[in-house]
Length: 68
Image (cartoon, rainbow, N blue to C red; front, top):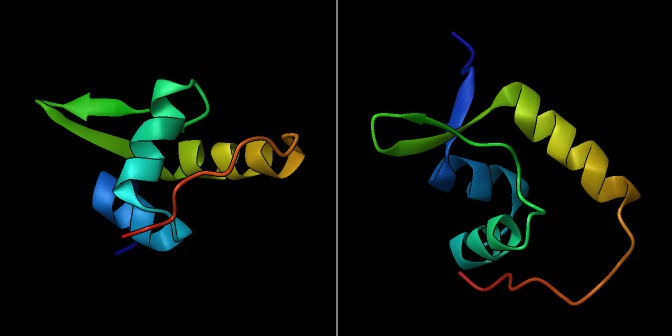
């Protein structure tokens, strides 16, 4: 069965970014759309695809932390 959403850790691993970098993107309004199931934030596969398209078109700005 294919997953329909990512946990934050799964999203970060799949997109090769650190969790700190992920939360920095979210804080700056540049992260993927999130949904919450209870208190757990999740990223749908559609939101992940939309985020990738947005990031491909985004101008390059300050570097995002990629340390794990």
